[in-house]
Structure formats: C-alpha cells, structure tokens
Length: 143
Image 1 (cartoon, rainbow, N blue to C red):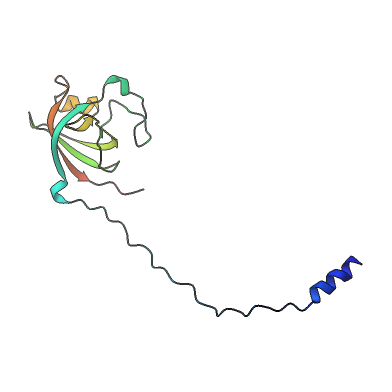
Image 2 (spheres, rainbow, N blue to C red):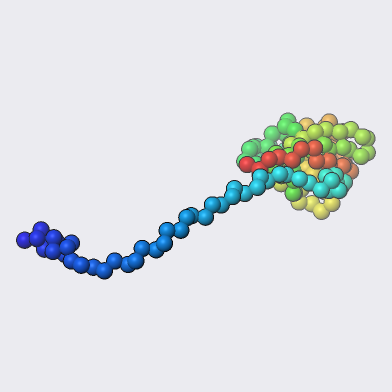
C-alpha cells in the first residue's frame, strides 16, 4: 500500500521552474606573484644592539624554534623571519651575518638583539650594548 502511494506522489504533476540560462563560470586570473621588495632607503638602519641573556636559552622564538646561544640568530621588530642581515659594530667595524629568527628588542633605541655568539664576534658583550648598523642582505620568501 505504501509503495503505491509513493508512486502516486512521484507521478503527480508539479510545475517545474524554468531553467535559468546557463552562464559560464567566471574565469579568475591567478593572483600576481608576491615579490619581496624593500625600499633601498630603508634597507639599512642604525641604533643600539643588545644580546640575549642566559635566561633565554631554550625558550621558543617567534619562528617556533628554541633559542640557542651558539646560533647566528637575531631578533628584529619588523624584518621578515628568515631574512639575512649584516650587523656591523660601529665602534670597531666588525661585522657578522645573521638570520632574523625572533621579534624584539622591546627597549627603546635598540634595533636588534643578538645571540651571545654574535655579540662575542662583534666584541660588544662586555659593554652589553653597542651602536650598530643593520643592513638587509636577503629578504626571506613568504611561506
């Protein structure tokens, strides 16, 4: 009995809506590639550098890795993580290349925090803070 009722319902005349004119789906162009560019006037900055204290050893950095005082890593407020910089101690002319792996420093006037290894190489660890120039060497690609 149930089956014949469903057949009756299935055969009933229900007016169909008129078919909409088939419109082709719009073709979206792929977005243009993102090319990392930096204004040459801002590829260098000068200010004070400090270095990470012992208490930071093993803490997570902004890139997710744990801080290693023997690494060639620096913290910078705005440069893309993974970028390469050249840090020059303006007091003695010593330079070192490093990778931006963390955010900071958060002390006014300081533009970069260095790993102790880099601070030793720049011969600034004894005084703790030194005037430096940070030059962007290579911008990291976006993930």
